[in-house]
Length: 300
Image (cartoon, one colour):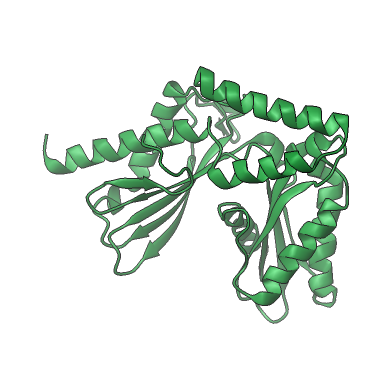
């Protein structure tokens, strides 16, 4: 077995373990936020919901099984250096890793082929796992964000190009309309990802990438960061509460990502992560040693 084959096998094995792992263990920032929100509740029903959440997480760890039966559609957001040794092999590795994780975790089979309406049985299919690429110049490292897009948290997903006269007030109205109509379906408290751009497809993808950002981080623009805070405050006042059964705080946070737009077009996209926000981040060096960024101290 030559060095390239060994490297591919090692990388694939690590990514299979990584994918299985984050279906069972929430990232550090989500755990910290849930503990914070749990402490703020002052009604019996909200307390029961949070107690159930934490009991569920404890059993997932104890029994080594996914914390939710809907393990979602697997998505990877890849930031890879142009000099990373396995750049040309990444897509094949991640597809194979998904197949292995499906058996090892195990993960529910969620990849249904459009038109044929046939489930592949291994969480792969046409363009699935979904892989979003950013190529980093003059780098030999690779950072991968993994995400399980469950049915409930995907239901509120939406995007729209606004009429120019609607402005940023239209962005806010769109977000609140969707969250009031569908937010309860996403197993709150939720993390809200918002994309603002010039077209629907860019805004939509940015809203999903916003969910990869740790809770508590902010848009680099002071105005963007202020809009994140205002949206979080407003959405929390809806009193959707944990499980959609009322209580303090409806969201874990609001993350906004943006792209420059056409002067005549303003688009907004919305994506939502449920309380069991199964997202993880791993960083590989050129020699394929790695660090779990989202789950500190974990070795796969």
